[in-house]
Length: 234
Image (tube, rainbow, N blue to C red; front, side):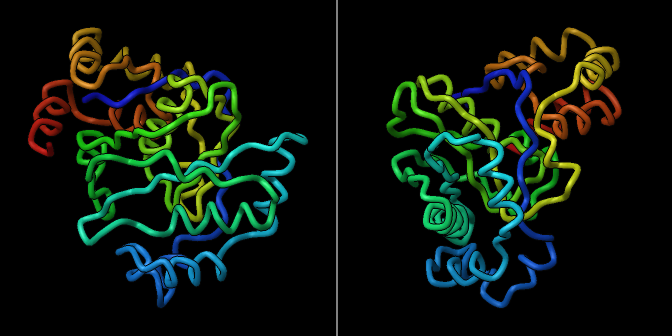
C-alpha cells in the first residue's frame, strides 16, 4: 500500500509549541513515546504553549476544525504524545478531537536518518468526514513526511486540512509547503528519471514532497545514491 499525498499550494507553516530540549529531556518523555498515556499527559502539560494555541485560533479564523493526531507506532510501542496533545488542545480550544484516523503501519522514525524516514512512510486509515475541516497534530516534525501523508489521506478522503501543529521540532522544519525554487533545484539536479521512479515507488511526484524532504534529496550526491539508500532502508 502506498501513502496518499496531495499538493501543498499555500499550506501554512506548522505551529511548534516547545523546543526539542524542553520536550525530549522531560523525565516522562521516554515512557510517553512507549505508550504511557499518563506520561504523555505530563509531557504535554509541561510543554504546551499558550502562544501556539493563540496562533491556532488565528489560523482557523473562527472555524471549528477537528484535531487529527498521528497515532504513530514506535519500536517500543504506540507513541502516546500526539493523542495527548490533541486531547489537551481540544480542552483548551473547544475544537473536537478526532480519534478515528489511525496509522496502520510501523515506521520507527524516532532517531531515524533522512533516508529511513523517506523509505518507511506512515500510512493512515479510518473515517474522514467529507467536507469537515481538520488540524493535524503530531509530537515532532522532522522532514514532515508523516504530516504530509496524514494531510494526503484526509484530503483524498474528502476532508479539508487547515494546518498543522506539533509539540516540538526544528524551526526550519515547520515550513511544509514546497517552494517552486526548491522543487526546480531538485528536478534540475536529479532529472526526470528519478522522479518517474519515485512516482512508481511512492505514488506521487516531487511536487508533493515537503520542503525539508526536497532539500534533503537535492543535497544528496546523485540519483543512484538516493535509489540505493532508499532500497537499503526499507
